[in-house]
Structure formats: structure tokens, C-alpha cells
Image 1 (cartoon, rainbow, N blue to C red):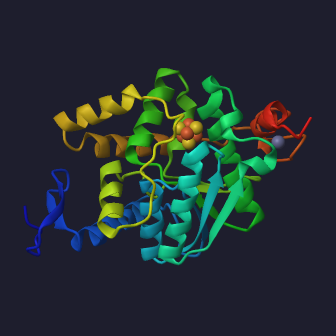
Image 2: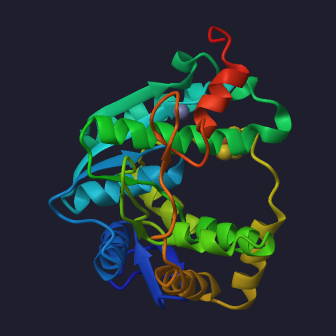
Image 3: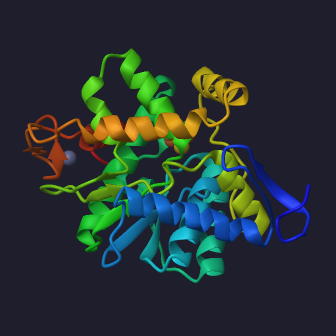
Amino acid sequence: MKCRCGRSAVFHSKVYRITLCDRCYPKFYVNLVKRSIKRYRILKSSERVLVCVSGGKDSSAMAYALKELGYNIELFHIDLGIGSYSKESLKAVEELAQTLNLDLNVVKLKDYGFTIDDVERKKVCSACGIVKRYLMNRFAREKGFDVVATAHTCEDIILFFIKNMLSGNVEYIAKLKPRIEGYDKLVAKAKPLFERTEKENATLVLTLNLPFTPLECPHAPKDVWKEIIYDVEAKKKGFKLNFVKAIAKLAENVSTEEWEVKHCKICGEVSNSEVCSFCKLVRRYARNVS
Ligand code: SF4
Ligand code: ZN
């Protein structure tokens, strides 16, 4: 297959009815990100954006696109202490920062007395989610960033939607907005890639040879829902994009105004209970803290 410019193709999409080469694809990708940001007002040009990078392909693609679009960004990485996976991830983000000529901020979970590998098996991903949300928000606010950008893909959003619907957590749809405004001590959150697929992100990083680690976290659960989403897309092209657009519309209509703001009595951050989930993890797992 050939690109419209005549060169060999690296990307073909039935959804966008387009075939592109390695030179034309990055421009196309960045333009798609630009369109999402504009349509859903995900970022403002005046904002300082903290771009969370895990070392994986999705966040490397996001960092590239936001840099190309001229946003005022710095990278942020959490060293979770997950054996060789975390070591490779840190190496990848360091290389990414160098390649894109961006400042990189690294926070090590072990500085709080524990790592994700210390958490008991059944609770590991939920603890990891708590750690990431807490550390990225706190770092962003303390360092004066206006917004935190995460590389949630359209598959992530659909997964989150299905799982929360099936558990009856209807109000959680509000968390799926492409942008969630900040309040109290919470910094605004942005998902610039919420309409992008994993395949689109992978094609970008491979085409441009951007640093990323292909390793998967050893704690990652096998997710049958992800396979189902891919199966449906294979039978019905455009399913993922249409579904994620519908989720964004639904999420816009869910109000968050009535959520009561409480603060953790230990760290002072926003919390649902007297002690926040992060401080509970520190209490439970930290080796140097009572
Ligand atoms: Fe954290 Fe690994 Fe679970 Fe992802 S799969 S939430 S990185 S522990
Ligand atoms: Zn706390």
C-alpha cells in the first residue's frame, strides 16, 4: 500500500479512510491530538502542563505530540520500584527527555518507605493507582503546574467505563471527562489521547523511533474486557472512537459539584475519609514509618 505522497505506507485506517507513510503519519497523528484538545478544551495554551510518562509507548507519544503543538510542558515519572520493569521504564523516560529536550522530574516511591512490590498481590494495582494519583497531583500543585496530563487511550476509557458501569459506580463517569477542572488542592487533569488508540500511539513511537520500553508490568492482570473491545472493533470498525465520544458526552452531563471536600489529617491532601488512601498505604507498608 502507498501513502498519498507515493511512499510506502506504515499506517492504514479504515476509520479515517487513510493510508500514510512514515513522513506523513506523525503530522496526521499530531493533528488528531490537536483536534481533540480543541474540541473538548482539554488544554489551554497559557498553561504549565505536567506530562506524566510511564516509559510506555502511549505516554511517549503524548509527550511528542504536546511538544510539537508548542505546549509549555515538563515530564514527570514515578519510580514505583517494580523490579527490572521500573529500571527499564526510568531508562526509557530519561532517553525520551533527552530526545525531546524536555525537563524530567522523577519521584521515587521508595522515598516514602515502600514500593509497589511490597504491596500484597491482590491489592497491587489499586494501590498503584492511589500512589500515582496522589504523587502526580501533589507534585504538580507544589511545583506550580496548572494541569496534569495523562496518556489514557480510548481503550483505557472504554475499559474504565464498562467496569464501573458493571459495578454500579454510575457517578464515576465524571472521571472520564477529557478534562476535569481542579478544585481545592486538586490540580486539573487532562487526557489529550482519549480519542487515540494504542495502535496509533505505537505507530507514532515506532515511526519516529521515540524511546519507550516494550516491557509490560509484571503485575498487569490479563484483561478479558480489552480482548472483547478489540474483537468488537475488528467486526465493527469505528466502534472504539464512537464509543469514547459517547462516553465524553455522557460524562459532561454528570455533575461533580455535590462532592464534599475533606482533608487527610496526616498529609492535608484531599481525601474521602479522615486519613487519605495514600497515607493508609504508607502506614501499612512503609518499613521505616510506624
Ligand atoms: Fe501499577 Fe503495574 Fe498495576 Fe499498572 S499493572 S497499575 S503499573 S502495578
Ligand atoms: Zn494523607
